[in-house]
Image 1 (cartoon, rainbow, N blue to C red):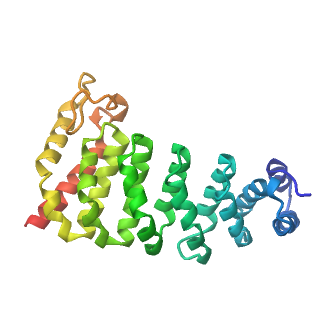
Image 2 (cartoon, rainbow, N blue to C red):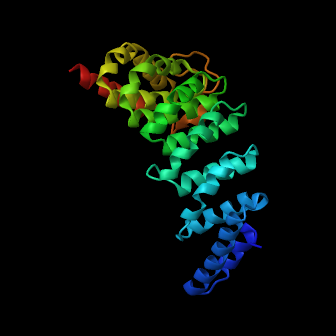
Image 3 (cartoon, one colour):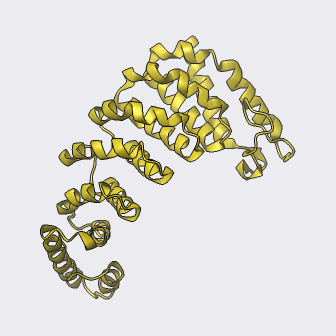
Length: 275
């Protein structure tokens, strides 16, 4: 029977030499492999968590890739969470088994829990290939209309990954993306500006439609510049009395400098395309 994660960490820390550490890891990996082979469902998430620790130490962990997919397919949120974490750490877009997770991602993108949807969107944003993107882009784009700002922000970031892999899809979603500039969430707003930046860089055919929002972008930037140290203003961009724009977005008295930089970058790109 393999040990718990905290016991494995304690055993590794107690090793005085690299040889002792390798012996501890080798023994534990053998036990984990046996548990995977025996299909020990009750301890699968614990074994994958230990495998993540082993991976972070630099030891081979590829034999646990299929177990990640099994955890993701689990209806249990704690197991699903470990599965998605392992997916993003143990696999990359060149891994062949990654295509097997597409159906689970598609299902989780329609899940009733915002946290499960968030895990799926995060995975898409980190790992999506062109083939996965074509299958999932409609589900990801539909989450831009979610009532939850947490999900809308993650959907915008996941869409960046997909459009980088498949730039020709950009035109199909420009209008919905531009609509995010009216969002009442600061996180969604800054993610939307980054997404538009990527579209301008990737797809020249969509630029003419994006140029129509230049007056709104300038107004957004002017409002930010006018805020300064004042906490009386609560608006950013196209919104007035914006409930989420508070002084915590200020840095040294400058109102939301990160959003300002992104706006300036976007306006500069649009200006270059007009020249």
